[in-house]
Amino acid sequence: MRRSPPRSAYLVQAGLKFADANYRTPGRGGGEIDLVMRAPDGTLVFVEVRQRSGTSHGGAAASVGTVKQRRIILAARHYLMRFASPPPCRFDVVLVHGVLGPGVEARIEWLPAAFDAS
Image 1 (cartoon, helix red, strand yellow):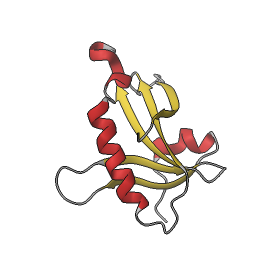
Image 2 (tube, rainbow, N blue to C red):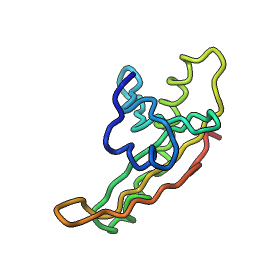
Image 3 (cartoon, rainbow, N blue to C red):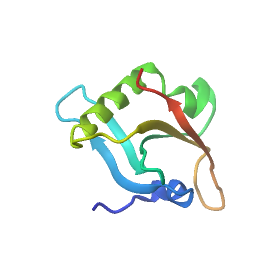
Image 4 (spheres, one colour):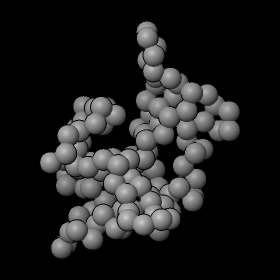
């Protein structure tokens, strides 16, 4: 099993278990999933992590538009092919507002079920 990256620590503290990170579909034009986590009820959670230092252009949340969502969904469908019987799943977004630095703590906002595959 792969080691949990530091950016998953917030979700692990919230009760999710690390499954995978930086999952990419093969070939050009595919998608990528930042984190794959498992909820206590067995739900597979595909997580997009977005960080923006400022709010110009809408901030971190605005950067997860429909095109980005489609690419994440594409990657999730590819990831789910490894299961004989796919578990329930959802798409979360974690927004990091601000910049981490000496004496500066960014604000983290977790949006469970931020979008769906329909």
